[in-house]
Image (cartoon, rainbow, N blue to C red; front, side):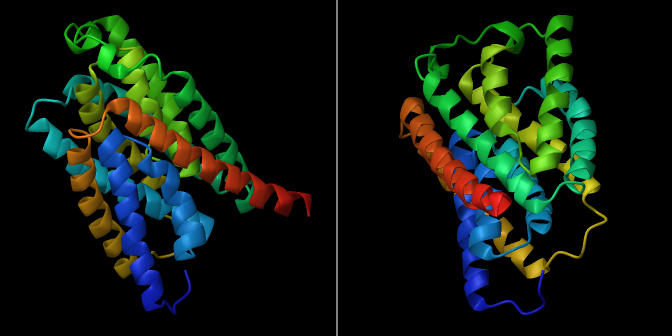
Length: 267
């Protein structure tokens, strides 16, 4: 990142961190999806540095969220450990793959991913997590549940390392629909998984240029405040409305990335 940083960039970093934390706290995911666009287009960082910073901010914020949810017994420790074991390996591999691809290609692929996620979220609105019962792997964690956690963790980890995302947008639905976790346990467990998998991605990016300490600190401060507010928001706003709002934001960001980087690739 350039040496000369402006006060405007510092303020934008704090605001960007707050938005990331807000979505992360409200949905257990989603914040990581807008972190890269915010850091690149708003704060003005190169893509690769934004990717590493995103992993650091999302990982630390998620760890804070996991600590908060664990006080209410909303974290399934065994599922998180197994999911994260293969997820951290996948994140390390994905981070190295990221460095072999041009920035415009990474952002174009990321835009496609955001649009798919947005459409998927709207499509599954009728299967609201609130209708799921507190049974399944949350109550009886069998060998089948363990295999699912290990297999899906690997795929989520690859996406995490390559795109610099926490993966909560995939982890939460996976825990709810495939492992049958109730929504609060899915979100709490997702926080711990995100923090551990993000660590694997950060390790994969350690050979990059130095990160600016003040920018990192402002992003973290903003994300912690946003996370605190977002976690309280879930008690006041219905899950369906939260999911629709997040899906709309993700879709708009994805469309913007597709247009901007698609034209750059064609040019």
